[in-house]
Amino acid sequence: MSEIQPASPGSPADMQLAAAALLANNQDVKMLLRVLGKNLQEALGSRVEVAHPSGGLLRRQSDEVKSITVHLDNDDYEASLDGPSVRCTVGRSSGGIRIRSEQLPVEQWLNRLLSSLQEEAVNNQSAQAALQNVIVGGNI
Image (cartoon, rainbow, N blue to C red; front, side, top):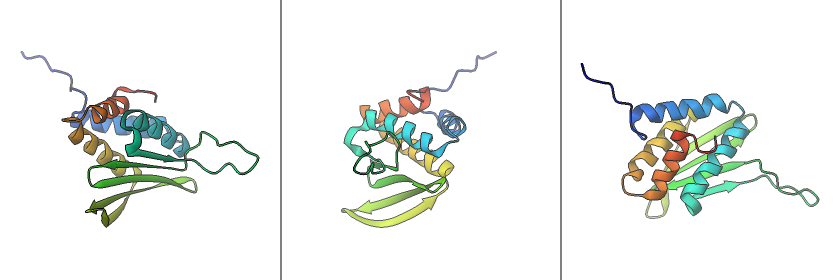
């Protein structure tokens, strides 16, 4: 009788579990953006842009996140607060010009982002670190 081997980090099953865990543990969309932005920015650096709401003259900038944008290959994954929900888009560029933009539900956006990270992680250590942070738990 053969023993069932656990899936390695980055397998499709892990991707679905990571997406489900992010969504389940972060019903508060502000928290979801903050955690995801922090984990990805730590691993991918300048390829992740995190925008914070302006604090005004007398208020300091909060740790709340207004939007995150992740640049992977020719795709830009953007998630931004839209009232009480998150608006998620994936934009495709060619030659520096955006040729397509698609709005997705947060679950599909997150799955596509994780899949893109998985593809890139094959040859890129920072993408591997980002994927590992999200799948294994990182700072979630």
